[in-house]
Image (tube, rainbow, N blue to C red; front, side, top):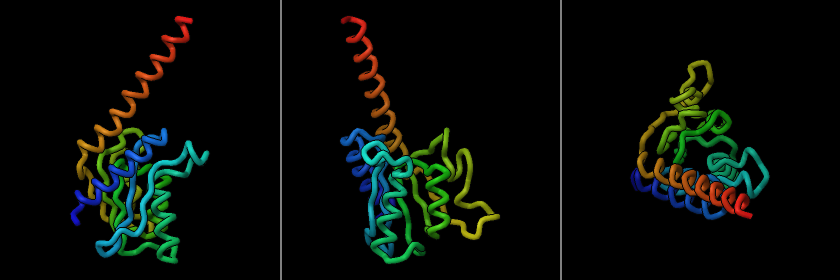
Length: 161
């Protein structure tokens, strides 16, 4: 499978997050061309600020592989990781990160910061950005547009009462 194929899988997981009322971000961990683990945002449903898609996928991959280190693994995620997720990838020794769209506010893999390739860290990962970026960005922007419209509708109904 190609990077685009794996990103499509992550996009499907992001849709699952959205169905659960979460911000639509999905992630998969792949090793030697095989799916190891997957995750999607679950911060709201689990009441856990660390339950980002990447963290869920990394945790599941570590359990499945029986090691907290994930060498020779690639993590695919629809949105550029934040500093928490990038830090977990560095600590887990993810070899490669592939993400869809940049996060101009909290991105830590090249846009705001670049923790994935910080020379003072004892591990750097290869980073590929922009894989199916338009699809990933559209999924997120559509979600937030719908959420804002719903909030406006609620406010209108409250003022009408």
